[in-house]
Image: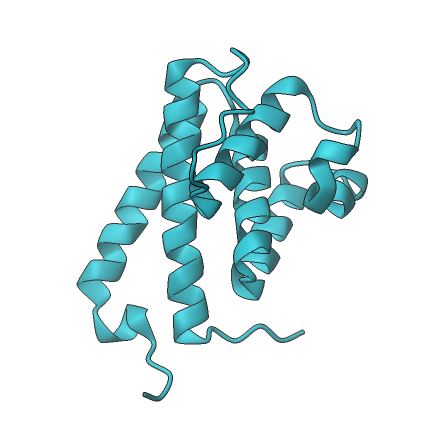
Length: 145
C-alpha cells in the first residue's frame, strides 16, 4: 500500500475527529486543568508515538501559550525533574497509561491529585491525541523546516 492521506480519503471521518478533539480540549479546560497542561499531554503522547507532525504543532502551540523551553526540554523525563507540579505529573502519568495500555493497569497517577472530571478529561484527550498521531503517521504528513 502506498501512503494514503486519511484526511483526504475520508474527509467526513476526519471532520468528526476534529469535533471530538475540540470536545476533549473543552473538557480539559472545563475541568480546570487549562490549555498549557493539555499541550504538555499532547506533546508527551506524540513523543511516545513518534509523531513528528504533532510534536512540532503542539510544541509551537505550547510556546505560544507561554510554556518554557526548559520544561519542554525535559518533558520526555518529566518524572525525573522538578519542573512539573503534582497535577501535571498525575496528568502526564495518566496520559502515558492510556497511550501504553499497560496490563495489569498501573494506577501510580491515582493519588487523588486529579478529580474524576479531570482524570476523565485527560483520558479523553489522550484517546484523541493517540488517534491524531495515528492519522498523521499513517498519512505521512510532511514535517520539514
